[in-house]
Amino acid sequence: MRLNRDFTFGVEIEGGSDSSYNECLDDANNIGWDLHEDGSIVDVEEPIEFVSPPYERSDFKQFIKHTKIVLQDINDSNSSCGYHIHIKFKSPLTASFLMDWDFIDYFQNQYRTNFKLSTRLKTHYCREYINRETFEDELKQQLDFQDYESRYRCINFHSFHNHRTIEFRVFSHIKSLKDVTLKTKWLFKTLDKYIKSKKFVKIQKIHSLDVEIPKTKKTKKQTILQEKDLIKEKGKVTDDYYDGFEYIISGTEEAERVEQQRIREQTTETNSRLIRRAGEEQMENDGRIEAERLWEQTRTQAISNSLRALDRNVDSLRALDRNGDRLVGREEDRE
Image (cartoon, rainbow, N blue to C red; front, side, top):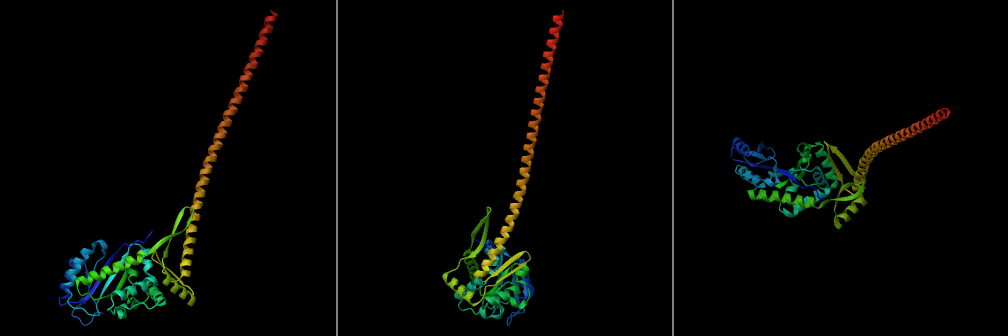
């Protein structure tokens, strides 16, 4: 069973415009977008940021049509401008798989390979994550909304606090409509490829209840690197719970083992409740059967007693009849 890859997306397009702010605002409102001033943009005239509403993936053509209108108002951009894409997964479990160093490392490497000339990972507003420990520390800060500055990373989970979205800030300023299509579709493809590699495996079956636990497929190289990490330091598990959404940061095999054990215990508790409920129902059913049996036994016994009493009455009548015959015989003899 595969993870649900369905999501909605929205974008932020930064740049400068030679149109007035009100003119840009009218264009944005006409297609359902928002417009903001952006103080992080420098050396451009009228620094602005267009913010789109959420789009379904199936509405991509409509998104491109609206983006074309927006880009007509942006005629200046530089390295201080960016193109940010927000992804909101319809399954919280799928989102949790991206809150993991394995995905961060995978994504950053894919970005370096496909955007070789980009220096965005070194830019203050979308810096790369250096290692697992740094990532896990900053992830907690972002999810707990502790440090506003912590959001300035290539992938920002800070927005998950308010909007349940994951923000990809790594893309540079937009040069053309074709550039929008290229970068957006590249992100979709990268996410699809990574999530597709994550599968559920059934690890046990307790009292006919299937238990499915996510398990990551690892290459031989990843396994060796992970074993080296285990030698260097003990495995850590960070569990947190926020507004009904549970996210798990597991960096080692030990972390995965602990998480699987937690799920087993939770499943065992659930099954215990099911067994108790089934037992109570069986007891109620057994009680009804026993009551019916006793009633039938009592009814049969009553019928049997009645029949025996009737037999006794018949015998009594027969005895009286015989006595009567004898008395009649005696009277006839006397005469």
